[in-house]
Image (cartoon, rainbow, N blue to C red; front, side, top):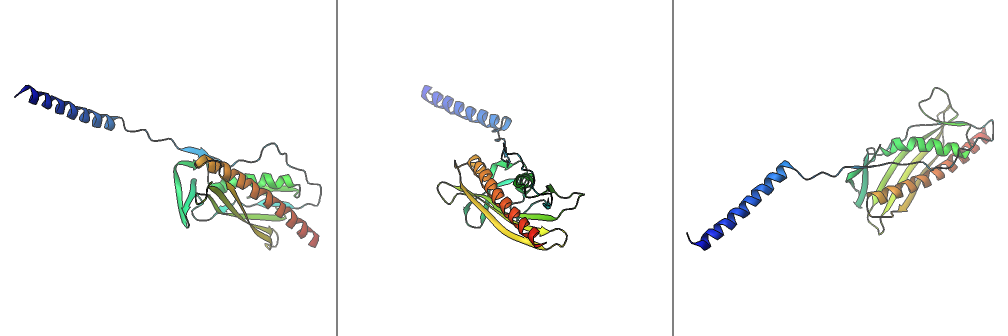
Length: 215
């Protein structure tokens, strides 16, 4: 074997050995999987609940919110095509949005001062009115630039004694995302939720007042 042939053989052997070592290392030390990031829906801070100004103000029970199919899990949903829901691989809610929404509803309604008490059901105490809500959608939409988050909530205010629906309405807020990633969507989602809750609380206060006048 000539020196040139020997040199070529050595180079091929070295390359083959490096490939084997590389494959062995990838098996022994697989690529690290990114840790999931967890996000929450938070209440507005720094605002104290208002006290009811009327002793005859109604009491309100808040049913645990429910969510439409596809929106009842911890997955953070985004949309690139109509009617097609997709999920971020490494970003999740710490709890399903419907469960995170429940205490936010109670806190926001208490701040109106329109109710003698607002409490989450089930509760041993009876109430005059009941609020039922359903999350229709909470999704990060990438069909526009910048992307945006859409939150839609359907609400029913019910006379808790007669089970009669006193008022119903669908609320929606659309907020542009500050960045084209899950975190930008989460920030926008929190803003959208706060907007909807403020509009919902005003709606409930007005409906409760009308119902009280008819009694």
